[in-house]
Image (tube, rainbow, N blue to C red; front, side, top):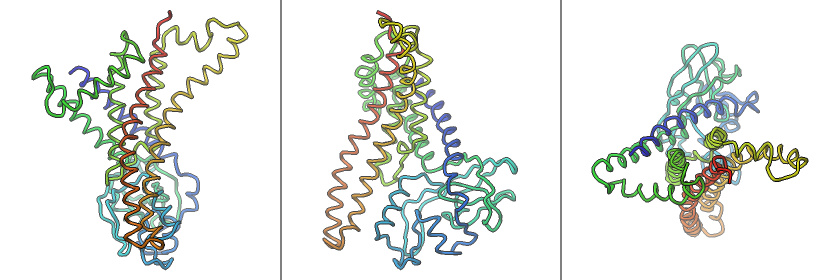
Length: 388
């Protein structure tokens, strides 16, 4: 019960840190090319400019003669990239022929140094086609990022700090609520007896697996309990987000490098603050080797302190992104192979391959959560290992 409650408390801190990282990423990412972004004061003004700036929405391709259909390599690639990106609204599906989207808006929360805090729903952007007004200030979407502009949308007045509840943030909140519910249910079930009931029956074997197969062997019997809350939170957080990414909701949270960097940063901070005398001695003054080698090895070991979390964030980000890209590419075979095999044949091939890779992705979802947790426990174990 204490373990479950500690995991809930740690998750709250994790969500706060990830939210702060997202705000920083939203502020910094996408500066390049923003000064050349086209502007849309009306929903259908300058249709070709709309294609250039918002090709990822693919709301209307009439200017290219495709009557709203996605049937070229360029359009398919743009659609896949759009799936991998974060968004300020949640679109379940779109009718490209009619130019309509089915979904719901998300809260936009901005901080501008001149006009202060702004709060409005993303429906004001009309999927990036119009300028949104808030308290006398005007904002637009350029390449998926919110920028400040004038009433006509022709000026680029800088980028506000973005604290918006984007699609990825919504995915993290959903995963967080699921974790709070599951661990709370597990804690309550132990109050009623030694054998868990309900969802606790599913969670207990996984918790024991993390404890007995990951934490104990890598950290050691003496110290593993201290880090169980972190390891459980990271394992279930990554696993649930990976599974959500395989649903039609199409969350791609762990395919966002800001999220994986924040998770890796947690591991890095815990490792450094948990390091004992033996750990730091091996980094700055390697025992058992000649003095010249100690001097040579010291900078290499210091570099290793940073390459470990870097490998964590890149491994998770790259594997999840690659999985989503492969799956989207297989789905696109319905369009690419239509000329060779017909609509029924291309759909059958695409469905078979997509189903096969989706089953593999179910394994990858668990495997990536396991690898991240296992390596984190291994790094922590290296930091707390006693001198023999």
